[in-house]
Image (tube, rainbow, N blue to C red):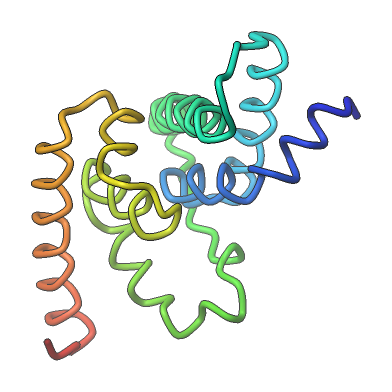
Length: 158
């Protein structure tokens, strides 16, 4: 394996895999997106200012590849849910992420980036090419929708 690819995999592999999985709900598809993202990086050899920009570039590519994969899978009607990505330490929050995965993509992606990846609203806005105020609105709406789902389906009190 290429030394740069190994470094990228070590530094960002988990984040890219989680991002792809949040879209695809399939570990196999998420692994494909991870591999394709690294290949895209090596082919493009982008000039990156710092590690934050490098991560943002990789996550943006992973988002685009994931969306492409969704379109591909919808045409083939092969979307499958694979729960193996959830680690033993996260089992107590599994129901929350299951509820998040049931939200429309525009909400689940901002929740994932904000809570799982620790991105600021400004970083999310840059990644998704939207205004920061739009991201804050999407986060607010996503939280409200999530609250309703958790209350109804999981009897989760406020």
